[in-house]
Length: 444
Image (cartoon, rainbow, N blue to C red; front, side, top):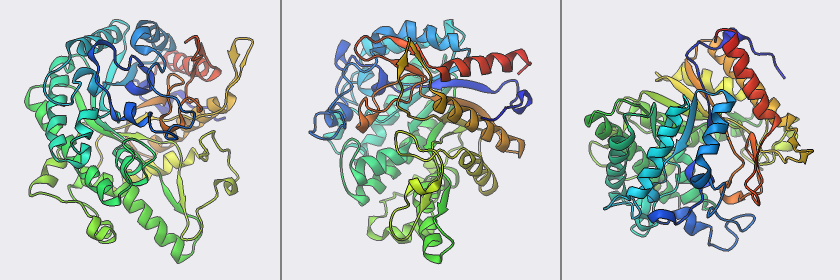
């Protein structure tokens, strides 16, 4: 592990933890909540590794006060959470659910009462089932429904939250949900995935414009999952494959949002699968953002032949089968800084899943602790080289429902016993708490 200088981060740097609604709230149909595409996906045989679902999850809907106390006890400044669209608007259009909004009113007010800045995400993948029945994100009408939903959330909560993120990781919604099909809604079509990505971008830009027009003062942006993409070798074939992967995985997203254009080489590769773009769409997409959130977990190594075997890297591998590569975070940030005119950046997710054991009431997760510490050090290195980053959020606060992996993978710095719902701070949480206390003591 690396010693991090107290001078590496400015005094107003935002330290936080992150979760998402479907992964922790439970209360799947309580108080008028409607179903989401993830409720539906969990019912497909074989879709979830352990055949589980999110009906109870971490029971955060009932235990939110104790969870906020836990967050405040870590000494973080901010909590990144998401609103469940079907909890506040069960059908995704039409009437809003007052009981659902009352929960988020309590949650946001509870954060403020504890000195926590609320960082709100509007779409962390739980699209209302009713909208999916009408085509979901493939249907352009969903763009307008999202703008109306975003506007209502901003009207009710925008005066109290520090930040509003439109979408979390549109690549996951598009590619894993609509091309690979191992995430909800489970569609397998490249053309569908590309059209979904376009509609997500469009809804992002139009929502920002609408929320600002009604006077919302919160910082607004989007969160992308990005990785540096390296060729497996210096061969021309591998370098060409890495270039294509970088186009589809990074440039397609960053350049649409920041430049209002799609990379020409990616469009050429897509051919007939390219999205249907209406006149004026790209201008609506590229409205200025107050921030860009980046979720970083690993780099990507690409080969033109057989898929790259992560075991050959010589680096540690997480329980998700992902390479531990902190340098990749610095490499990514420096590349973005070099190639694009960026808004302020937040690292909105960073963390690792490892198998944990409870020993005498404690969880000694040295590998997760090292992962977090070394990535913070890599972040500090990029900032020393001129990249502006305004905050860092650990993923995740709690062990939770890890999408298609169910409860088999644990990302939390706080262990959750799913039978009793007992929370136990792991060593990584204790380290993070002590690290932040030391930063404050040194005047950071």
